[in-house]
Length: 361
Image: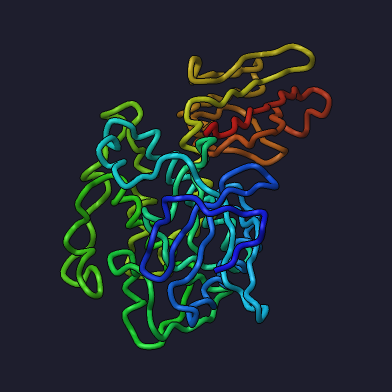
């Protein structure tokens, strides 16, 4: 194909099942970009899917689209996208067990990409290890939106995609494409990142006919046996992505939120303040504190690395004027009152603030 003058072809084209990716030198922006073209022009509609998906997503974790090329008839002939120069994850399974934090960071970023595209109605439909990679800045990005669906309700007739990543409900004629199918593929990715061999039951057609997929704990270390191992909540979350009932799979938003919370485990700090005096700090170094104000009331709060939980209440103590019991959580910012309301100004108040650490990638 004829290229605009700003682009110069480079060596190293990669051919896929439906198209090729060709590196180009962009003389305007002075950087190498990628041109994606289809082998068969009749499949150029997939390029429009890519344009729709990439333009709608606007996510830090989705590859960027830079340009659209047209032929002499004005039809789309190729798209120019960001070149991801970082590592891929096809061999990550070799280090996964020794690097559970790195494992979670990858999954967190993929889940965040899915959250972002699902929020604008895009369903990827071909999530697999081959379709996400790191940028030169070390950010994991999702790409290849060629068979994506712009919204729910789309019924597939050809069921394109990769078999072992396909959800069980796809194996019927005229299956309706849903975000839950992406979440099933995400669960398969969790396994593929951790092991060179997927469980046999995931290769069945449809999958998991003879048995449910084993827990990811079978191939990944868990907490507390390993300090940085997968927490029970994470194990259950990843396992639930492979539930054969799509209604029982978590949303990408929920997965992103929970994995993000576990990536900042033991990094929160809580501070109790009475008046202008700091009472005490609650953190990984000081995980438990008991506050007692005379005969008005007392409360014990424990930080388990994820949340600040009340474990004991004595006398009259309320959070934001609501009575509390053992097991309740402290909000990120709240007011604790000690003493019955009937005491009026005789009550005492303590303010609680908790930090909200960000995931560092």
